[in-house]
Length: 239
Image (cartoon, rainbow, N blue to C red; front, side):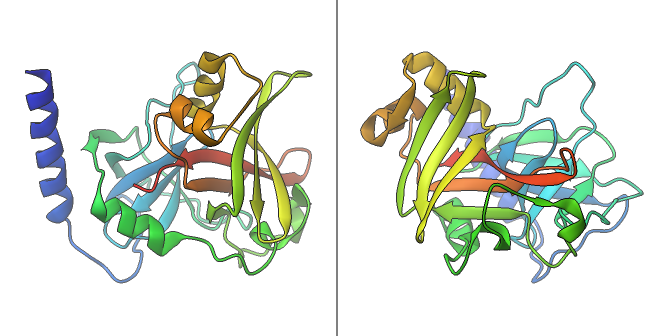
């Protein structure tokens, strides 16, 4: 009975997404209704694929102070944009503010998701986000660089636990760089906890996550002591 119910929800979700209008470009109007496919979600923001245009957007969601995000990978969500979109952050040009918490509709998997992710893959034609090192001063950003990158690692990824502060890190090779990022993906952190290991890679990582990670979702943080840091906000399967 449960599996039949899930299949019915999946069918309805696919129908809902198929009925959405298609736009060649991202359109964000104050107070408008918008729909996204969740790729990664933290209290700071949620990265989604805008389902009308296929573009990457970062939603600032007004979570209650004591409530963590309950959005997870490949959730289809509906939200209303705030009257003041606050699209003036030069370090995060994709970021917009929502008026209220989004509504979860269902999940989307399969060929369409694989196609959307493949279209958004970041080419390895230079350092991540245009600069080397883990961070850059906020005052150096001009709004002309993306703050979201969907990476296909050349080597890895590998999850690691740092003993000093119990933080979770992801390591992967991209182009000629050996990249280490703080990992804020709740699912990845829980997988490392459940495995009771300090490192996970290869088949062990795939088993712990429940899928083979193909993409590393990376974003730029809000300023911390005047610097924006590169972080990992999601490990994603092929779709």
